[in-house]
Length: 311
Ligand code: AKB
Image (cartoon, rainbow, N blue to C red; front, side):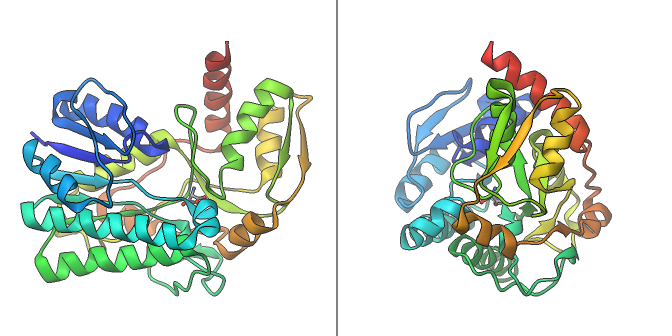
């Protein structure tokens, strides 16, 4: 039985991942940690990932065998405070990797479509390609991928990761990303029948519904290591969409929904530096990745769940 420590457990991914892992492995085996107080049915500990000693102490105390390191600043926030983002994203990652090395733990951390840049091929972006991102978040993600591969090669650590698209969910809000519009649009559709997008029309980015993202983490971590040619990090993809595609999908259920635009130049610049659609062939071949939700299935579920939440 696994004993999994999750950092950033109260964030957008963490809050749902802890629930999913609790179902799969038992809540008593999931050690949820975050910088602020919170709770789940199993152990919860306050951990600042920039404090290496505290991270080590908590991992050891709970006899952890796996770390899922999620605590990070997202792209838009990182662009506003680049040095702070470096300290949290890279400092936290190297601390978590060191704890994994010292205690010999399996290791997962997410990369992102943000690990690509303007010189990367934009359509069907290959698994192995040019990665020259122009954002601090992207620099952190590429460095993180390399660092995780380094720990695997140099120390034999079982590090694994995926490049997440923009993740869409209704449980916890995303914190300062470029793809956040794709979550906000559903809340505003339910509340006000209208949404003003900070991303311009015809700006395509990869998106994924949270249940597919969570299944991908569990499946990759359970995959036979002998089959993995890649490690950090696999392209995974489900939906490639622009704001007007979300509007059209929502209008099937809310016909008078209106989409307006007020473009935020900083987030638009980030979005334009990312791919339109990445190629997930390596993830499919090496560990059987398959997304279940397309734009319509996700929209139907999001509208239902967000409206239940509001009532
Ligand atoms: C962001 O927009 O920063 C994230 C991501 C794609 O990594 N959602």
